[in-house]
Length: 233
Image (tube, rainbow, N blue to C red; front, side, top):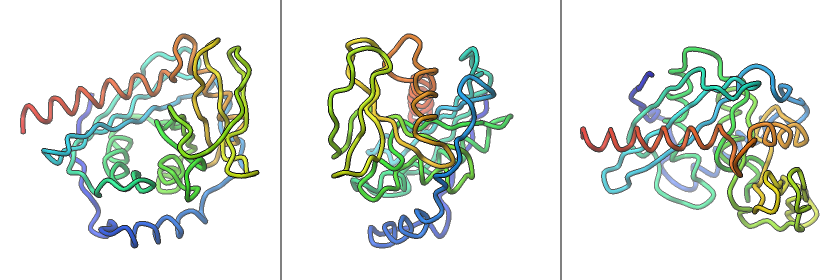
């Protein structure tokens, strides 16, 4: 497996005001009229990030799975310095440089990228999945553990039950039940994927657990990379 050093770009936003301006600029480039790759075909990649704020270290992992079998076919990690302070709604600015470095280190194309977070289901309609998609050009979706500030009806109790995730009357994602009788996950479009397809991918990636295999594997790998980086710091 490849581990690389991530560097924050020289022009990376340093203030909340600048970060919000960048969000506004990049949000206009989100593509919402493509269906995206078919579930169960090609590759699907999970990305996730772990931090040690005291030591100013962030580690990202990218794990490529065969979409049909969910077998791991490639992995890469990146370690760097935290690139932005913690500000709700601007978390992508803490994560993107290191996630992009991990994706760039992969030995094969990642296909669809699944983020542990949000795409359109974000107060400014531009969460990590959308931000990453626009900068990388890759199809992306967000699968989050909680609904952020949005409301939803209770989806059906069985696997596959879904309910709109709403900002007022606007559907920004879906609450999706991936296990019978288990709390739903919250799926939103990032870039170049339809919401129906994002939900289909999420179900294809959850044969045994609530969270997608992409997220589970990337979470474990970035935590291990962070432990290793801190140990050798």
